[in-house]
Amino acid sequence: MSREELITKISEDVQITKKAAAQALTSVLEGIQNELADGGKVSLVGFGTFSVVTRAARKGINPRTKETIPIPERKVPVFKAGKKLREAVK
Image 1 (cartoon, rainbow, N blue to C red):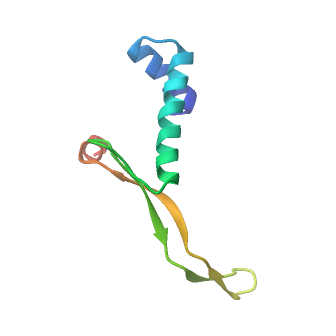
Image 2 (image 1 turned 90 degrees about the vertical axis):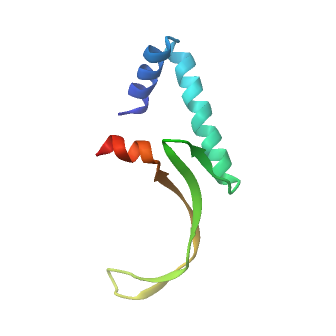
């Protein structure tokens, strides 16, 4: 499902304009993004949890030269599906 399809679904389900649905979706996504950027987490009960984890530094291999290269630690966003979402996907 694309962003536009999701906006259309929201506008039909809640009976609001597509513009209002787009603004609502943008607000939700920006809220999640801002919270993760601040190092927090967002829990949507039954759906899942968005959080940030730090991947440890490690050594990688350049596939072209076979040379070992250092890969620094970095923070990445992760999503853990909630129970209801996992059951719905089965």
